[in-house]
Image 1 (tube, rainbow, N blue to C red):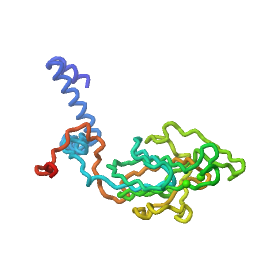
Image 2 (tube, rainbow, N blue to C red; image 1 turned 120 degrees about the horizontal axis):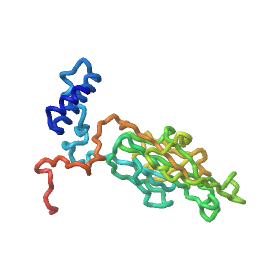
Image 3 (cartoon, protein in one colour; image 1 turned 60 degrees about the vertical axis):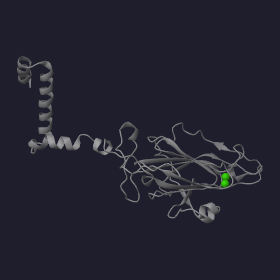
Image 4 (cartoon, helix red, strand yellow; image 1 turned 90 degrees about the horizontal axis):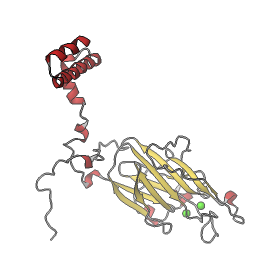
Length: 268
Ligand SMILES: [Ca+2]
Ligand SMILES: [Ca+2]
């Protein structure tokens, strides 16, 4: 290599020399990596290098056909982060019990992080003017086959009334970690969610009016006393096995134009 550098310095401009050094280094590296296919290394490089083929200029704009429907029901309230960003908030704080149905444009791996709350006074853990201990419950189903079950992580951060003592109700709170919804948050020490039956949660009618088939009600260990529960789940790939385009980089490229005639005329 030293000899090569001297020769290059003598006979070439510095720009051309730099080019040749890079080429030589590339050949040496490629020859070491692919000793038997040296003539093909350039073709291999072209095939592998720009992962732009996945996210590059040919990426089209997504349409609603690329989205998946999400059905979510919480007893009593939830908010959902997807890949670290707030995506869905239950529009009714506690009562009545409602189903939230939204369209999502999924990206995999998909990290789901949910905060769910039972209707409970934060100081007593009870509801309806401290006359009742209510129960929680959370269930979710996406059209890609993502469902809630015991594979989710679940951790309670507010429990009460401690010991179900309604005479002297007290609550134990644990600070919620600042980055609990982040993709890289470490939930390894969190327990798995516990599954509950419909009989145990007793969902209201909107639950039966929507598709939750295959999904399980989940909560932490005590569906009555745990009143603030965080759930996390990492969906590595679409559970239904269907290939989906990753549009998450769409704002950094110029998308392919839609076909002519795709545009609709003005409303009549
Ligand atoms: Ca409760
Ligand atoms: Ca409740």
